[in-house]
Image 1: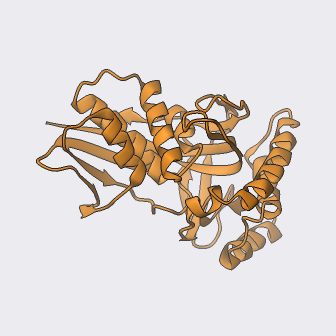
Image 2 (image 1 turned 60 degrees about the horizontal axis):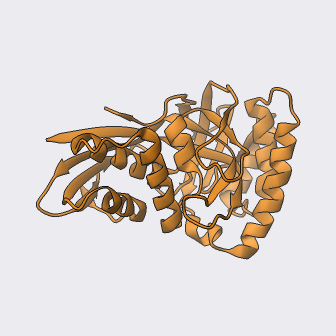
Length: 272
């Protein structure tokens, strides 16, 4: 017996950190969107617990945490993705949520999608691998989160179309979200950015990219030379671009040299 599920990648444009008393109430506010690429997870019963990514053994902490919370049975989780982990696509979250959906289906656990999303969100927070990707991956779409204390709630902005991106390399999420000095800068810049977007009657993708770039600069996150140079090249030619949060990667609303493309997707995680 096997069961499979898919969870979309999430590209974060702006964020600020909300510290709660528990992993369930710790989260982020901000703006981001899911795309038509992500992680597929296949769960099956096994003689020993193991997680494989493209056939190779991996340790993805939030996946291990959520599996332990769902069952004590040894399971094989097989993951696949066309995107790179650790580069700003929220793939640890996607792997966790897709695994949770697959295990729930395999073992007929009867958990609701919301319950699985909250378990996955808490696992991400505990592992310091993310604070808000699960919300987007559970709901799907171009979303704005502005309600402190409500990790799984978001407003749909109704933005559709294509996004273009280029990855230069990974950026360790934990090194950012556990650094209180960085958090202070991020939250000041994030609050300002959210207010700027909220003041617009109908924010567009270019609008959000412009605010995202300002946020990336003011938060101190836009530090990688290659990312800075590419963003500068795109904007100097009249385009809009910013840094994907959190990765040494660039995204834009227009094509540029060496880019890959994806569709902005309204589809959240689902069982295959």
